[in-house]
Image 1 (cartoon, helix red, strand yellow):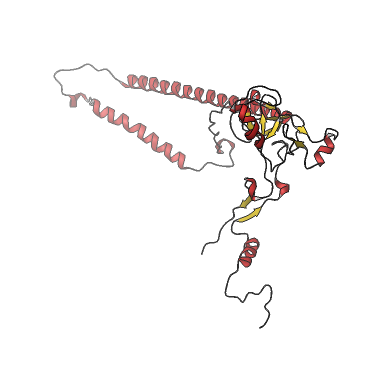
Image 2 (cartoon, rainbow, N blue to C red):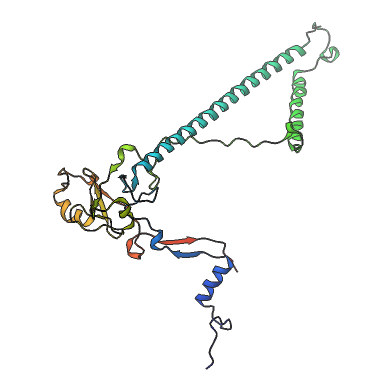
Length: 307
């Protein structure tokens, strides 16, 4: 039996390898790729700066931030909201003033039309012995009909003017783009990750327990395992579900919460009573494996060729 080439195209079957190769080369079809461990954020890194936190705080939804980064974001969002509200109020005031001007112009046109109609009336002495045809008076209906024809002609002229294309060489006739209608902005500051309302009072300080107290901050960044559970001393990583206790800010594993803390609902670090709201599950990144519960598949949708 003869040996076939590796890229033989004489086969009757369009293989999966050939299909993927043609898809990547043609630029059509949706491409999928699995993210590596380098594309996943560590559990102790800020969601904004993506760097290990020096002064970490956590939101009620479990997203970890550097205090300086999240406060700067909140202030920036408040300034942006104030700017949008100012632009919205300015547009509303201009629109209100434009409506007032249109109302004044309509009232002036109505008064002008009334004065013109009053000035066109000619008073003549009535002779009871002569008919209307002899005196040359015209019925009011005919006058109304003749006066009604004038606005119609003006409308036709206006339509003809609108159909005429404006000139791009004369500045006064150059068309202009109308201002976009602004919607009323919301005054609520939202979390950059969850999109829920966020206040400064909702931020809870987090205190990680160091694995080795003798290691400085630069040495911590280069190590893969930096922190441990405040109760069981188990190492913390993306593969370990963690929780933050609100009264003390200590970080413990969920296993410790289920087996030890939920029995008495007492913070083992500060000794204060706990509620369900005081146990904040910390959001963590993936581990590079399918069992992490995080979507690690990236998709890029491109045009599809249909037969």
